Amino acid sequence: MLEVVARHPHARAILGAAVGPDGVSASHAYLFHGPAGSGKAEAARALAAELLAEGSPDPDSARRRALEGVHPDLTWVTPGGANEMLVGDIDEAVVGAVARTPFEAKRRVFVLERADTMNDQAANKLLKTLEEPPPFAHLILLTDKPANVLPTIVSRCQLVRFEAPTPAELSDRLQTRHGVPPQTADAVARLSLGDANRALALALGDGPALRHAAERYARAALRGELAGRPWIEILKIAGERGEKAAAEVAERIAAEAELLPDRDARRVKREGETTARRAHRRVHGETIDHALQLVSLWLRDVACVTDGVPDLAHNVDRADALAEDAGREGLAAGRLREAVALVEEARTTLSLNPSEELALEALASRLARTLG
Image (cartoon, rainbow, N blue to C red; front, side, top):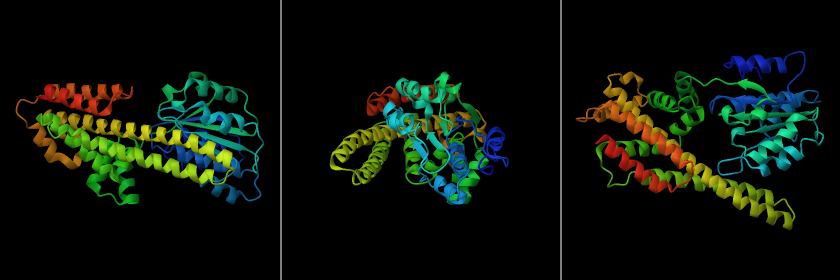
C-alpha cells in the first residue's frame, strides 16, 4: 500500500495511518483527488486490498483478488452516461448493495470513478449513504475535478490529495515501461500537462495519429490552407475510437447476458445498447477535445518560439516545424495568443453538443482570419 503512494506526501500520511501496523482504521468515505493518471485508481485498489485482507483467513489471496478486481466484496463503478454518472449507475450497485453484509470479508468497499460527473439525482442519492454508512462499508470516490463535486458530498469525505507527476517522471516512465523513444517521450510528457493517461495515449496506439492530425489542423489554419479540410482526420480518429468503445461495451454486455434467464437477458441487452451509445458519445467527444487541446498547445509553442523562448515549448521533438511556423512574415505572438483563446472557447462550446464537424470547420476559419 505505502509503495503505491510513496511520491504523494498527503496521501501517504493519511492512508499510512489508516493501514498501519496497528491494524486498519480507515475512514468510511474518502475523496481521492488529483490530476488524471496521478495514481488515484491504483491507490484506491491498493487500499481496498488492505481493507478486504484484514481478518481474512488467507490475506494474500484476498489482496491478490482485490488488486485483480475479482473480489466479491469490491464494487467498482464507472459513469454510464455520455458525460455524467447517472442514478442508475449507483442505485443498485452502491446504494442498494451497501446495506448488505459482506460475502466473505469483514468489509465491503465501493469505488466510484469520476465522482465529479454525478448528476444531481445520483449525488443526492449517494449523499444519504454517505451520511449513515453501515460500519462495514467503505466508499472511495475518485475525481480529477474536486471543485465539481457536490460540496455536501465533499464535506462527508476525508480528502486525499494526489500530486501530478513531473514531465521528467512521465518521460522516464514511458521510456522504461513502454519503450517510447526519449525525444517522443519528452514531448508527450509535456503535452499531457501532468495527465499520465493522456501521455500514454499520445505515445501508443493511434495517439501519434491524433497528434499528427491536430498539428496538421493548426498548421493549416496558420497558413490559411483549409481546402484540404484538416478537421476530417480528427473526426475520423474520434469516430473510430467511439466505435471501439461501444464494441467493448457490447461485448461485455453480451457475455453477462449469456449467464441470465431469457427475460433478464433481454432487459440487460436493451440497457446495454443505451450504454454502448453513451460510451461512443463520451469517447468521441473526449477525443475531439484532446485534439483541440493539442491544437492550442501547438499555437502556444509557436508563440513561445516567436517570443524567443523556445525552451518553453511542449513539442520538443518538432522544433524545426515550430521554427518554420514562427518564421512566417508578419506573424505576431499577440495574434497567436488570440488564436489560443479561440481554441479554448471552442472546447467549451463543443461540450454543449453542437455539430462537431461544423464547429471544427468554423474554428479553422476563425483561426485563419486571426492569424492571417
